[in-house]
Length: 341
Image 1 (cartoon, helix red, strand yellow):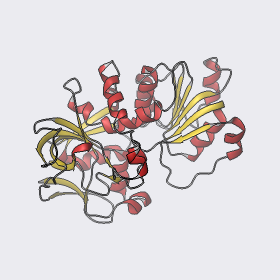
Image 2 (cartoon, helix red, strand yellow):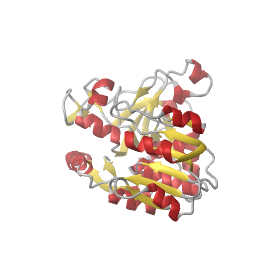
Image 3 (cartoon, rainbow, N blue to C red):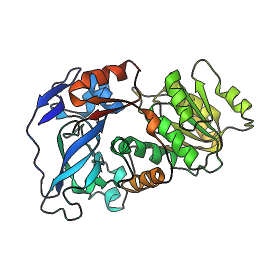
Image 4 (tube, rainbow, N blue to C red):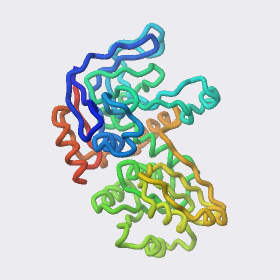
């Protein structure tokens, strides 16, 4: 079968012909129809420090995908062939303390699809049956392909009560943009988002942000004054992985604020811990989705009017993957969908 492979420990990917995977007793075989490129895939393509520390080529990449179940293992009795599913990209052990307590997203033995095992930038992928999430007909393929990153936005934003709150989002990439839509849908008052890229900020406004602030050119405090905010932000969602943004978050939030950290940092970031202590902040790290409550909430919100289409900027055939990655590296694309079948 055709697959996009991290073949060697170096920059780039290779479109190769690899054996079609076989499902084990608890697995499902999925014929992939659409997949989406994530920031993680850019790290893997570039072979940066994070990628070098977390994967060992050769690996078929890709963890955001939707497809049709073609075959199921002998022990899978809750999913039938022909079911359209998206894949939860975190495979957890199922027997550690957190997994047994229903907190699989906190499993210390998590394996990443498309990182530590073969993923979905391919004609077929195998994942455990419990990781396949059936998709209702109301959700189109292009949206089903990005339920994984939408889940990140949903998990991050819904970590705290948003109703009537003022929210600061640092980082207007696709997940930050979707977080704007989730916060607006859930009843936030003012949503201020920051980023360096004007195009990303424009999309964030379309997704529900109240104000979009160009980092380094405009002041968040000016936006706060314009909005009549006399205190700091009640909630902050850090999605940029920028040390500067993290510092701004701690400075701009109100006493007792809630802070969620999703953006991954290339290097350790220094913060003024005293600021967090003296303000009595609650800081929560976010990794992936709560399985599978986040998936349920994401689909429920999509079915009740949540709109995330604006983040999708391009479609490419799998054969044209180099053009897709070039567009992303050049900052010309938002969310890119690979049409595989």
